[in-house]
Image 1 (spheres, one colour):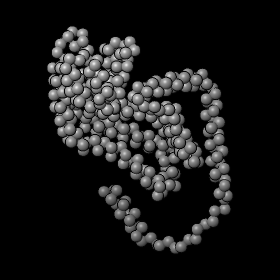
Image 2 (cartoon, rainbow, N blue to C red):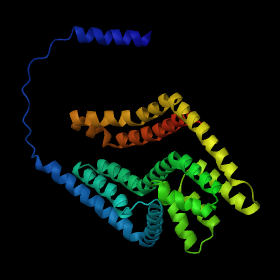
Image 3 (tube, rainbow, N blue to C red):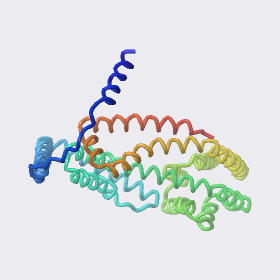
Image 4 (spheres, helix red, strand yellow):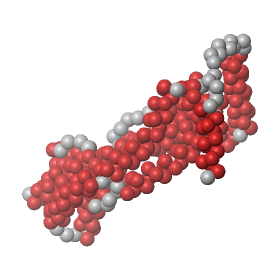
Length: 317
């Protein structure tokens, strides 16, 4: 009741207030270059403070850089194992450089820190994100060709060839990426590596659950014996059944997957759109201490929400 009375009183005052007359805009007598000069001085002081802090912790930073260089070499090796040639240093430093440049162009210390921090986070994690994407995409492509490879292997065994010769047929007759993987197994085997160890290497490279089943079946058969032709025929039947279930699952969970994408993209898209139309208003808020905290708070809870929605749409067949 008190709130309603207060609101009514304020509305009454607004309605009965005398209209304001025209007031000519006041001329700004201060120089426009002074705020810009002060911002540039503040940026230089911030750079000086960061440089001094880095000089005081040079040994720790050197150890961190050495650890990151080791991770970069590991990332480059993993990309090569996926048959992808990528300059890892470009993936790391390009987001950092772009974000730092955008932060400098804002002429705001909080904007510089926010964009630079986001660029550093993206740069340090982007190679790992891209590697996971490449492994997942390549694994799905291999799974799509796996049934044809199993049929070819089964027919080769029925015709009297051994498993190594069957792998050679797959590497010769099928198309990449499965021909590349099977061909690499044959090359490693010809260079003196055991066939079982070469199969384990392919299992490490390719993110495919079905391929892991096939490799385990071959390793067990070569260890304890068994009819590998019947095993391959059963695996082909399982792949067909699982493919039908996978298609049905994708249709049933399409809404949840789209919702997770919308939840993650829509808020940031609205922020970018509003920044295009009202850049001064958006920069004044989001490049302030409260705005930085708001962005961090929203990013934290939005990541949790995206993870929950994505988990709701994941069904293991």
